[in-house]
Length: 392
Image (cartoon, rainbow, N blue to C red):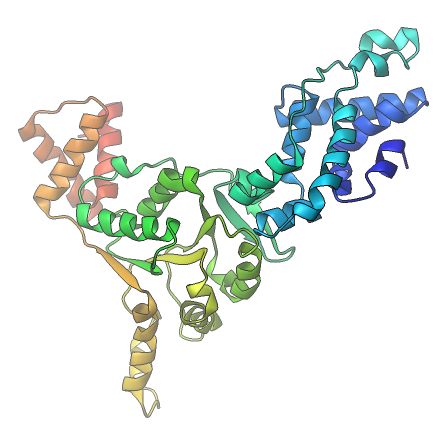
């Protein structure tokens, strides 16, 4: 155990479990040239991969990423005043570590090895315990701080950053003004701590239900909105998820269930009902947004109608009850011919593409016949074909 680790056997000790920070501590404190060289290499590798410009910026990022007693308590909105003096002491130690000139470590190496030694800048570390506490309370730490869209690892019970997020913006979604307004108003109320419902986006395929949810995230992520996309098979983990998200009360989380439907014997149906009418659905910083093409969320076979269920009507009501448990249902219907052409025209205008009206109508109708429907998705696909010159 090196000298730095001994001094940090306290509130910020987990920071040195990071491979880069541990390497830097070894490089600075070890008198063994081999240990120091290996540590320097590990730090330089981690610094490069992180994209940080210098050692001080790297330390700041690690402080934002690492769960410590201090980050956990501050993010939860708890009183951390009793920790501030100790945290400032430990930050001073870490500041001295990252401000150590690279040349100091380099001079430990045999002269023949120095030309190959990795070089980095120390930078200037300026964080204080109070500034860290303020930032933790505002935006949390770890994955939820840096990733607006998340997945849930059902084995490790941890959040995973979603690497590829649909970049769609609200202005990219044409028509459906009333539907978008209802979704925006509910989400703004949620962000402002006002009464807001769980939302079911229901309607025809390709009408922009999922895109609306992604656009809401892209619009309001800077204001603390986060999206946790959850597979139907993970619905039973709602209680665990609720507890984990409650640790970040300043952030607002949409638990997103896309293309929702259930088989007749699907246990997740009951789990979702419990979540919607139980504590998770009412949690201050969590709302459920789901999309579906089906009003009857449970897939039903004709053969089921001739079964031996004595109270078939009650069974049907039970199936519809999940639909009714959403506080807000926003219906997206397929556009008519004029709306479809208007959507296509607006998409092309955004791309600075002009097509004569008569030709545009002909292309639109021909494409809709091939697709078997009119929808915003079909309009966007046709716009792509027009743009690349393959429309006919």
